Length: 293
Image 1: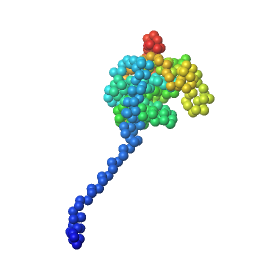
Image 2: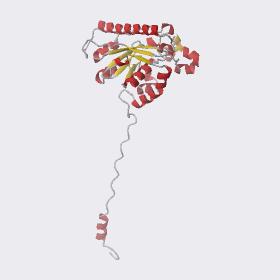
Image 3: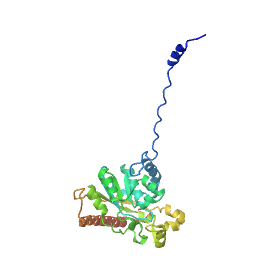
Image 4: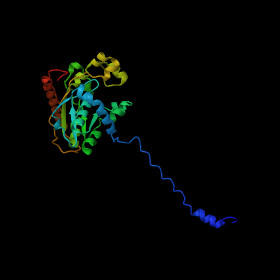
């Protein structure tokens, strides 16, 4: 090749030039739906935020005071059962916050599927520990995952009662919560709550508005009268909260049976209801002030 290398030399020279390494495959993007969200939709990150936001309300507005908190087990599954009250209940977040901050154990709260169906509210409810109240959900949490589960046997019968009927427990249904505890082989831990009835008392209910909105009840609360219809549903009165944990009720039957005695289930359910009612009456008798305890 005139004035330079031959064609063969040039080709060999080019062959010695190292080829650039192929770019590595890009890292797969993290699925934004996953993160720290568990199979129930609970996010520990969201729970941490909720605890920071709710702690001033818990400590300085409701000034929650516990008696017998050490009766809640530090490990293993247990079904927490409490009385239910308030047009927009304040007892569930107070119990969940107290147990999580004082004992360091997460609590899953069972509630009507209605909450899950409400846009935005349903998602936030799930992220902060809410689970639809279905027996299979409760069993998995208690038996297989050994978690603490909170349930209110009165359901909307408790939150829908008027202020004149405060602290008078409604029926506990057909005792489904007892049967779940039997199947799962876990104790039931009753919790008596005083303060929620006065935090948002219901003065009147509109059956017509309830039908139109497809809600279990549509209340007119003292909070709406005091703070107006826009702020009223979100502002609680600063009632003093007192929570008393009663002795755990252990099931005297083997777990995972196909069938349990209906009469035995109802006896245990009614016994727990009576224990809670007596505890509430005693706490009310000892209370000197709604606001200061």
